[in-house]
Image (cartoon, rainbow, N blue to C red):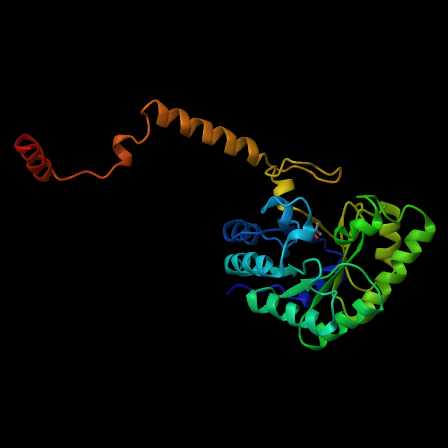
Length: 283
Ligand code: KIV
C-alpha cells in the first residue's frame, strides 16, 4: 500500500531536518517517473507556459490549460504531493474568483495550489482557501508573474532591508496558513536568515543551500529545455542530445530502408501469402 505524501508529511520532513525534494512536471509519464524515483512534491508550475507550450511568458497560460496539465500529472502520481500553480490573474480579481479557480485545480487532481506574492488581499485568499480545505504553497522573492513591476529577472534579498521585507511577508503568509513557501532567486544568506525564522518549510530555487528543500524545473535539470538556462540549474541529464541522436538515427534508418526490419513487421501466413501471389497473377 503506497503512502500518500500530505502537507503533514512535508512539515514532518522539515522538523526532522530532512530536505524536501520538489520538481516540476507537466505530463503523465514524466510525473510517473518522478513519483517512482521518490520525489516529495511535484509542482505543475506555470513554467509550463515556456517549456511545454512555447509561450514567451508565464502570463500567457490560462486556467483551462493549467487544469489539463494538472489532470495529466495527477493521473501519473500515486505518492507525491501534487501542487497546481495558479496562473496569472486566476487569483487576483476577487477572493470568490480565486476560491473558485483554486477549487478547479483540486477537482483536476491537485492536492494543493501555489500562489505568488504577499499582501492583505492575498492573505485573505489564502485564508479562504485553507478554510475550504485547499492547502496553499506561497512564493516570495522573484515572482515571475510580477516581472513587469519588478523590472527584470533579478536576485531579491540583496540587502538587509530587502531580506527583512521578505521575512515579514513570509511571516504573514505563515500566519495566513500556507504550508510552505518557495523562495526564488534570493541571496543564500537572506534565504538562510528567513528559513531559520519560520516554523514552516522553505523551498528554494536559486536561493542557496540552507532552504528546507529545493525545486527545479524538470525540463531544465533533465537538459530538455535549451532556450535559456539560469545559473542555479544543475543538469542531471542531457535529454535534448538523447532526442536529437535518436531522431537522427531514426531518419537515417528510414531513408536507407533499414527500418522496419523483419522483426518489426506483421506477416501473412504462408498460405495467405500464396493466395495473394496468385491474386496478383490474375490481375
Ligand atoms: O512555475 C514554476 O515552475 C515555478 C517554480 C520555478 C517554483 O513556479
